[in-house]
Image 1 (cartoon, rainbow, N blue to C red):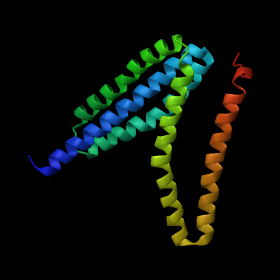
Image 2 (cartoon, rainbow, N blue to C red):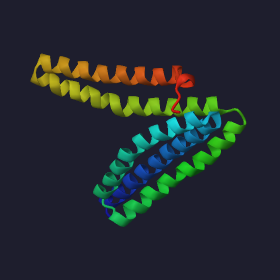
Image 3 (tube, helix red, strand yellow):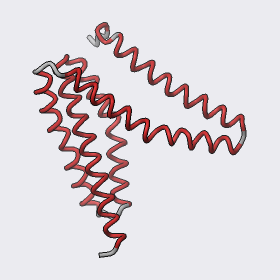
Length: 169
């Protein structure tokens, strides 16, 4: 076996394992959220759906570019997505024992870690790239990045703060 083949296999397995763990945590959050209230469960489910669609498409593209056939990439993506159901069942069970707060804390910590490890270097690289063009472009990029982060944090804070007052019907 060549080193390239081994590296492609390890890379593909790492992507599938990481995605499976991520989906498990999503399911855990959804299960615990539905134990809190239907509105919270629906809110978390919609947020996960909006995040997972591009994420799964990206994973599928990564697996294809790593050398998997379309069928292999679909099966690997499907199997990693099925871990969400395992997390859902565990989240419902933990919610029955009033452990939802710990589930949400764990999930929030994990997603915060992911964002800091993945997103911040990308934001840094974009700002440095803009800085090479001009100081004005760097300032504009920095402004847009901070506006996006602040508006996202404000939206999440508002949803958390006023969730009891939101009514759809």
